[in-house]
Length: 116
Image (cartoon, rainbow, N blue to C red; front, side, top):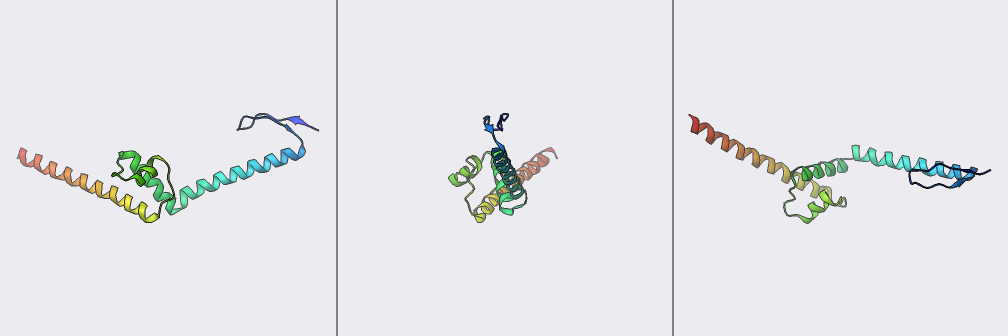
């Protein structure tokens, strides 16, 4: 017995026999489980959470502090970096926020002094 299978997500067709159907089903199941495992670790692994936060900060501000490594992390999806370096980069963005807040407070004080 042989039937023609509809197109798969990879846009190909092939004639399936009973064994091919089972092999394809097993392959599809393994692929689905692998994707779910990747998603789980991106959502629950502390390293992946920090890496995602760093990428979001870099994308939000378009500032990489002249670091090629940070540029590769943000724009080229580099992930083979130590957690310590990720913490340093996140800390740099936090210091940037503090500096921006400090400048904003100074400007607000000067404008309040000028109106009094």
